[in-house]
Length: 334
Image (cartoon, rainbow, N blue to C red):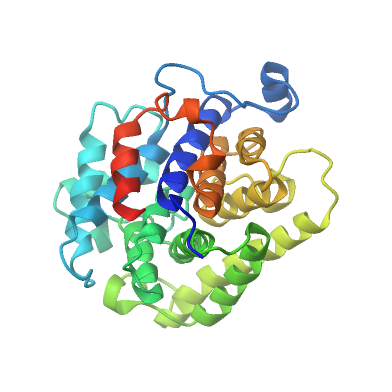
């Protein structure tokens, strides 16, 4: 059963997590607790409560998807995504410590370089998938289209196979949560997806050049590395979920979230641990030693997709930066 207002819940949840994690990103867990208490940050601050490039680029992806006219054939989304990424890169509001990979790739895209040469092929940073949630919300996308669009939007900036695989998995998690899968069942669904897709290189979406790198002999060799690294982090997520929760740093087993697969796994850990209290999930994700805003934004996206808008404090709705943009995207897919 599809959750009511799941798209709005996902997008606003992402922004709420981003805003809560923004001031804690470069702090130790001890310092975060000293400032906010053991429960971590649970209240938005500022009017509006400011977000980071995570929400800004999510909106860019969402706008690009709304720009698509007709079926999203592989050649259609790329120039739309490019245009929205460059609009973001040139914006005076792009002053939230954006990732160097995104800036470097957008700089090349702005010079007219084809994306397959502009992308940073060695990067699997979480900038690839902290922005992918809208792909999982487009009801008209079948699973293959979801996979192609998710990987393509990642590939414009992050050309590493794990960035592609983790972006697909993140969008797929949003999709299955929106469609009613319980958060606790998501890791198994992602594991199945990894095994199903391990040898699938989506040349129709990515072209036949991205995989051609030193020591890579076939597209299967290229893409399977990404799926294998995602399977590895899902193993670590299973270990973390099997341990008693001592209230410690969620990053200890699943990683600090600076890279795509770890951001996904640590966000899922927080979302599953606190599925009965989504605000606590955001606070827990923001109380981490790693990329707190990206971990918290993905945790918010997952739980918002699962439960809709009703799980978020209603007074936050008009407090969050870019509320009008988020509402427009949410209405389009609710």
